[in-house]
Image 1 (spheres, one colour):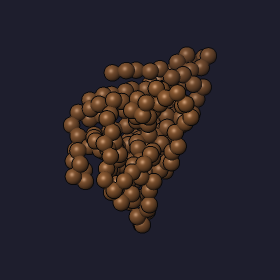
Image 2 (cartoon, helix red, strand yellow; image 1 turned 90 degrees about the vertical axis):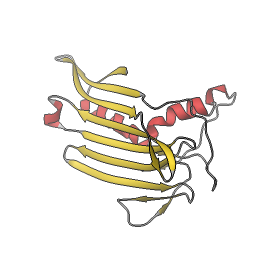
Image 3 (tube, one colour; image 1 turned 45 degrees about the horizontal axis):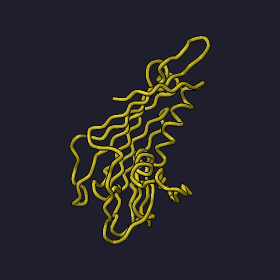
Image 4 (cartoon, one colour; image 1 turned 90 degrees about the horizontal axis):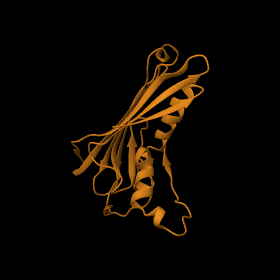
Length: 191
């Protein structure tokens, strides 16, 4: 388990930054009717990454404000007749910070093991009493998704990615650092 200490002037700002990263929940590249295969060198089942967030002030010193845990379950699940990795992200405030702004967030993605695309995304957010419950089902063959928050099916930009794997996926699996041009990568986001 890796632990990273993050200091900031405001715990709510730290949590906002951590969870805004999750707005990248799904990232796009390209697709065809037949799903592609991508070699995954970025992450594997059983990995866990923990971020501890601190409020640091002159008076109190560092005080634990919250924690964000990224975990890829050891056992996957079959979704849309495809083997998937079950990725769970839990974020929450701790201690006295719960009195000011209680956060209990859970995000889940079922990511295709071969094509590295999501089939199901689940969001359960409770931040200061504001709740969001949303399930998004992706049909990667027809590049459409249906969200529990919307009545109609929506056209998606194909092969959307979970945000918490964007950095590793792009930087390790696309050969970005091996490229001499490093011109950038075009993307669209699901929100």
